[in-house]
Length: 348
Image 1 (cartoon, rainbow, N blue to C red):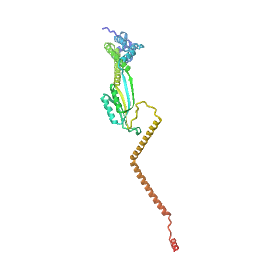
Image 2: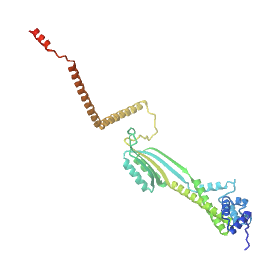
Image 3: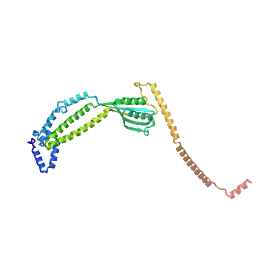
Image 4: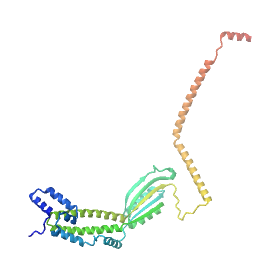
């Protein structure tokens, strides 16, 4: 069979060196250069003779015919196709909900929430529970939990209804992110890569030159790597769309925060006075209760200090009395015998 493919100057040199058995380094360098550029650049550099290489010609023709994926620069067909596909595809919405709630039955509600997550086919992504060591008594908070759950999107509202009916919901925020265009674009890209992979495999079977085979195999590796990355992103989007992310911040309290059902009206002066007075009474009562409770709690220490202080006082008093007696004896003058006799005669 007459050989149709001819090497360029660089290709002839490469073939001669391969035949002589001393071209390992040159072949690696040449293949790396060819693999790092597209077919047109490889032709311009002299690595591939595209005029008489059927495999390369087939590759160019097939790539040009793939109008479903790559449109000519500047015609805008690619973005138009993706937009039309997105309109025909069901919306891909990533929903996220954040809820802050209060309860007086912390253990029961937490267990109920976790059981409901499993019942609905979801799972707890993270759970952070604090037993109240860092929360002060002023806010009437005892225990605290932050639970992030992934609930099937179709049953997310059912889960939120449970939380709303079992706890005092203080705040609730919700957001949705539309990823339909990104999703459709990735699917289109994956289909185009599949088609390109099939064409390259066909051309690999008919390739006669070493450089063609090296280039095609390198391109196949790049395509497979890109496909794996796209598939990973698609799986991530699928999970985020299929499962709504709900984060519940749950606090155990003694008194619920008042959440008005109607729009808040500006209170009158009398209402403000009454509310402030009642709050002051409550604070005074809580302060007195805390004082007496604290006093009872530290009473053993107070008794110990009282005994110590009393002992010190008694010791000091004893020392003072002894010093006073010594001083009294020192400054007292004892009468002599002559004086005593004279005093007796005077009396007679």
